[in-house]
Amino acid sequence: MRIGILGSRRGWHVEALRRALDSRGIPAECFPITRLVARISDEPRVRIENQILENYDAVIVRSIPAGSLEQIIFRVDVLHRLENLGVRVVNSARTIESTVDKYYTSALLEDRGIPTPRTVVTERFDEAMEAFKELGDVVVKPLFGSEGRGMVRVCDEDAAYRVFRALELGRYVFYLQEFIPHANEDIRAFVIGGELVAAMVRRADTWKTNVAKGARTEHLELSEGLRQLSLRASRVLGADYAGVDILKAEGGGYYVTEVNGIPGWKGLQSTTSVDIAGRIVEHVMGLVRTQ
Image 1 (cartoon, rainbow, N blue to C red):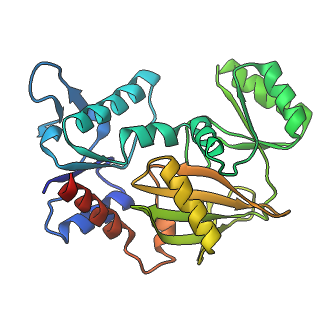
Image 2 (image 1 turned 120 degrees about the horizontal axis):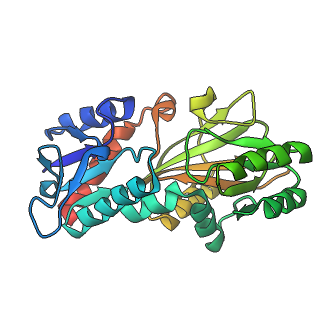
């Protein structure tokens, strides 16, 4: 069995997957997705450096780095091509496309009846200002992004004007999500193969609860209702494994804010005895055996 990792050659998550693969007798090879070479009508059809990716049984995608629109589209196109060539891609190209785009993720969740904050997305400055006046207190997010980078809370009309004008100059899309008061904490549920394997609460000193921003983590046993909510959100995005972010509103109720298709689990691993990398690898191996 040959399983590759698409991501940086270094990094905590890649090393965790390497160890999990090595312990199961599978040579752990990692390749940078930015060095893809794809051919049509000639072989090899997909390679990175001297490695022919179509010869692998599966690849685990750990990174879609920032780049131009053409670069991002090409990388995901190649993931589709690998799937067509019989390589199991985890998560799939379709899942990555759905989860990397915050608007599309929120729309898919809402269409399936999963509670998510009210959101307005537009390319027009005046429409963004109208949306701010309607929602009152908003989180302005980049359409693509992770770890809380680029997110700004705006609750003042003058501040909204300045933020939106800056975005307009950069020709960005305006993505406004209603701010849900949440006592500076949220929940990360980790789903692998349709099973909840671990969950934690993240607490911070500000409204941003990302571990990358310094949030503190604590193990959490989910209620049956939250477990089912996490599983439903993961299924909607077709994820083999996913990090599901849930807010508990101070006034009551829960909202799914994001489903991460290339989730990190370093903070979560510190709160649980479950070998998360091992569970991911076992799931991928099971997919290969049954395909």
